[in-house]
Image (cartoon, rainbow, N blue to C red):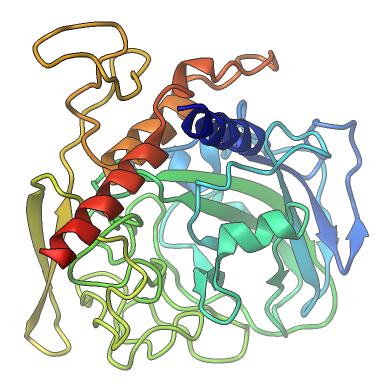
Length: 398
């Protein structure tokens, strides 16, 4: 019992140390140079800084473009040249030295550019970067960003014409993305002035909101478990394909590569989309299915390129929003009800982790106050993982 308690407390301590959900961008680095021109935790003069570090979850919300202050111009412009490397700096509350975001909030990072005069409206957004799961480093884009002190690299399109633009930096937290409206989007926008003598104008783009829907590949995805796809290696971030300033850009054709991971024939945009093709390594990194029953859901997205349908069937554990602090598993006798009795909705590791992440989000500090995640620390999701492993070993022996 003492050993188990020590393991449990160690796990809680590790979880508490890594907790830093929600994130915001207050400044951008250019070619390795810090351009912040405001105080710590204060948005730079060129940032249309959101009012909080909270995510956008409604795909139809105008805030999907540049968050809740995205249409309000600010006084400054970040000056860059074609080919410059710019790096948004992500922080939990804008203050340097904090964790950028909880390590559990994995997912892709992307960037878009639009004309300044459009003020985020219309089919104006052109994608200029997209990072998802990197199989070479075995890291999600968010994990790589955290390791890089909160920064990820975006290249200004080469030969882009001089002028004023809006650049959107977006992080997609997928810890609850197994259903429509569950994923967390963090769009942050900078006013940018491109210098130089480039001659390439922005091509036509897509509307945000509008481009992302529940059926857009990469929006709905279970990062914890699937019986039909590899939760990491098969994932491709939603997008149009990246425009680098030279190649033809289309929002409604098949792109053979999206960050180098998409299989041939994979499509994005408008009505020309197909589900990602399962790789040969499918399910090799997915967690073993839990011992409880799961509700299955099947989605198929039609492809105008092949006229065939690719079905994705994902087995997911049932989940409902916790009404209060979740309880840890208990050794109370059957039929009794105590404050420490296990809640029936947390029957396996996957559903427990989803509830744990939701609990973290519900207890974010308000107005810069101290965070109190104590209500989430009694869940002990690791115990469910050990139970599943023991059940699997038992089944293998018999």
